[in-house]
Length: 237
Image: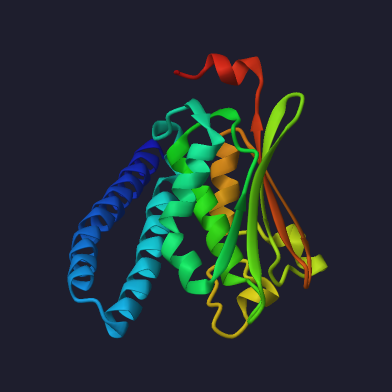
């Protein structure tokens, strides 16, 4: 039995290493393609660039998915300012916001939390991309990001005025592969992986993630950062 278990572990680790290697290799032709587009700007290359951004997002999602079972070996807890991580996530998705005419409202983020910035930026990117994907068509779209400080935690809120989620589906949004009514809508092409990964990574980082939504009005996601002395003592400034 031990031999079988060890063999399974070896095969799983070998597959994970291959996926990570493939992801890093595929980034090279992507970067080269973007450089070509940058040097030959027109309407066609602009559209190709937008599609390449989507490919890049899916590749990043695959990388974090491959690493999600070994987060403990890959995260680095230290002091971070929420504003810096939010700005990085917004910058990563800047072209998407411009393309979809999304207005950003960012405030009250001068708060320190103890976490891994790389993982938080990825989680925020997933939430922001969802807000864009499920915005109301032909209407003013806004994403608001702000923080609230509690007695023993800091809550980062990502709020949009999109199409929202059906009441009966809210409790299932973090399930792996769950797409819901919105995900099955024409042209949405949801995989049901984004929010599942966010929840999984938050659990590994000792955080909570909460989602509230009203259909037709919008969605609000809260990331809850613990501020206990235990967490602070584990960090490196």
